Length: 237
Length: 291
Image (cartoon, rainbow over all chains, first blue to last red; front, top):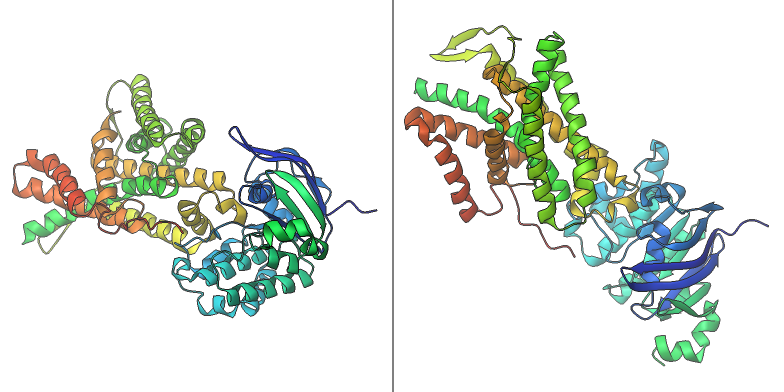
C-alpha cells in the first residue's frame, strides 16, 4: 500500500504559552477534498500554517512520504504545497502579473510556466484583464482569485485554503468554489478551512470538526452535514 | 551663469556619491523597515578596501573598484547575519542601537589597523577640459558615469527581475513571501550585500576626488546620505537618488554663495524643514494599511 499523501501525527502548536493545536492526527489521500471546520480559535488556521512551515510544531507531518520536519516554508512550496493564507496575502505593491510570476520562484520550465499562466487566466479571466494593474487596486473577490491563481502557478499538489469565502458576495463565493472543484478535478488535493461550514461540507468529501485545538468529530462530509451536533453548532440549527 | 553651471557640475559629483550611499539606507529600510546606521561606515570600509587593493596589492583602478565592492559586500552580509538577524523580531530600537554599535565597531577596527590617515594612490590620470567656460575633469566624468550606471543597474534589478520582485514582496509582507517559494533570508542577505557594494563604490569615488582617507570619514557623509534618503522618501530607490542629487547641489551652492561654514547647517536644516512639510519625503508615500 502506498504511503498516505499527507499524514499528520500528534501535531501540537503553541503560540508562546497558548496552545492552539493539541495533538491532532489526520490523513489525507491524493485527490481528496477535505475540510476543517470549527469555531474561531479552534486551531484550523494553525494546522495549515504548520503544514506550510509558517509556525514551529511538535509531532510529525509527512507529505508524499517525506517528513517535513526542519524543511523551511520556501522549500515546501517546491515540494508541491501551496498555501492561500487567511486575508489572501496579496502583495499590493506588485502588479497582478508580478504576483503570479513571483509564485513561480525556482521554476525553470518557461513553457510550463506559460501554460500554467494560460490556465489561471482561463479560470479567472479577470486576472488577465487586470495583469498590469497594482494588486492593491483589485476588489476583494479579484484578490481572492489572484491568491488562488498564485497557488496554481507554483504547480501545487496540495492546496491549503484558508477562508476563501471571507468577505465575498455569495455569487463570487460560488464562482470561487466552482473553480476549486475544477482544480480538484485536475488532480490537486485540497485542504479547506472554512467558517462557512455549509459550503465547505458541500464541496468536501470528508471533514474534521475541531474544537479548542482537538478533533471533535470526523467523517464523510455528507454524514456530518446531517449530524445534529454539527447542524446545531455550525449550520445554524 | 558659468559659475553657477560649474557649481552645479560639482554638486552633481558630490550628489552622485550621496545617492549611491543613500541607496543602501533605502534598500535596507525598504526590506526590513530598519535604519542601518552602520552603513556610512561601510562607505569608509570601501575606501580603505580601495587603498588595500591599489596600494598594497598594486591593482589598477577597475579591479580595485571591483575588489572593494566585493569585499565590502561580504562585510555587509556578515553584519546582517551576525548582528541584525538575531534581532529581527526584537523591538526596533534594539536593532537601531545595534546598528550604531556596529558602526562604532567598524570605525575603531579600522582605526586600530590604521591609526593614521592614508593617502590613496592616484589611479586615474586626471585631465581637465573647458567647455563653455565650465571646467570638467576626467575624474568627475568617471564618478558621474559610473554612479549613473550603478543606479540604472539597481533600478533594473529591483523593477525588472524576479529577485527584485522578491525584494519588493518581502518589503510588503515578509511572512507571506516564503509561501511563494521565496527564500527570504537569502534575499535579505543579497539586499545587504548590494547596498554595501554601492556604499563601497561611493567610498572609492570619494577617495578619487579626496584621496586622504581616515576611519571617521563615513560619519558625516553617512549622515548626509541618510538625510538624502529621507528627503527623497526612504524606501524609494528613485527617491534616494533624487535626495542625493538635491543634497549635493544644495551643499555646493551654499558653499559657493554663502560662507562655507553654513554648508552642514543648511543640510540639516533642509532635513528638518522637509520632515515638517513632507514627512514621507519627496517620492515616498505613506504606507497604506494592509488589508
